[in-house]
Picture 1 (spheres, rainbow, N blue to C red):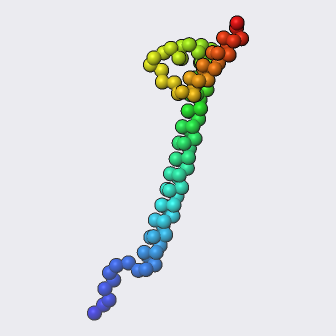
Picture 2: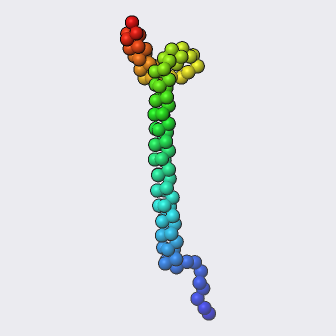
Picture 3: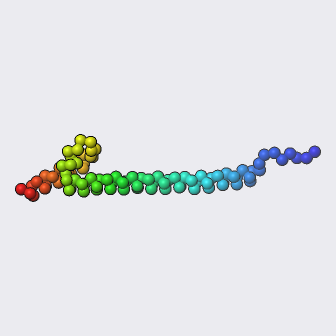
Length: 92
C-alpha cells in the first residue's frame, strides 16, 4: 500500500535544534549581563554606604563608635579612630 509518514525528517529536527540553540544563547547572554549589573549595583551600594559612614564619622565620630547596635566594619572604625586622634591633636 502506501508509505507511512511517521516521525520527523532530519531537516526538521536540525531546524528545531537551531532555533532552540539561538534562543538558549540569547537567554544565557541576557542572564550573564544581568549578573554583571547586579554585581555593579552591589559594589556601588557598598561604596556609597562606606562613604556615608565616613562622612557621618567625620562630623561626629563618637556617635558611630558609641552606639552598641551599629555594625560598623573594622576598617571604618580604624579610620574614625584616626580621624578622632587627628582632630584631638589639632584642637590642642
